[in-house]
Image 1 (tube, rainbow, N blue to C red):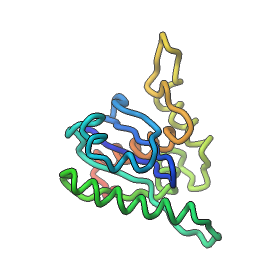
Image 2: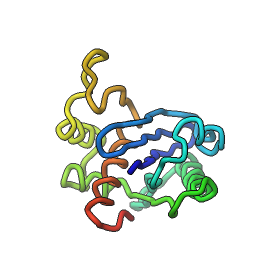
Image 3: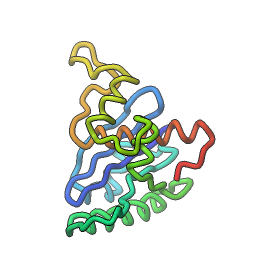
Length: 161
């Protein structure tokens, strides 16, 4: 089983393709490129069993235009996933569920989540001795965290959303 996990952004989005053992694709691309048919077939083919996207939740704080732009992109990703022939709808995953799953605390921040992934999968390593997380940077860590949560949840038989 391969999972496509997306950490969306208003101008750049990170994606990871994960199978529970290794990362097959991991890249930060212009947000609009994730909608391209040529991108979908050139990079990840048709061997994706599920699409999971980080969901934006409101916690009562004021937000800017970038958050609303990101929300629109999320909706476009969901729509495009079905157009690509996804077997089910793309699943939206709130950040707090990922934090709770990996760090056992909804208050966990990005550095805590990154460390939890390193604790679980080992250090990124070097070019000569690459670890599972080798090459992850910036928002790719968030996309990987979403992928791990989705894979673990799917195989545990829980509902991912």
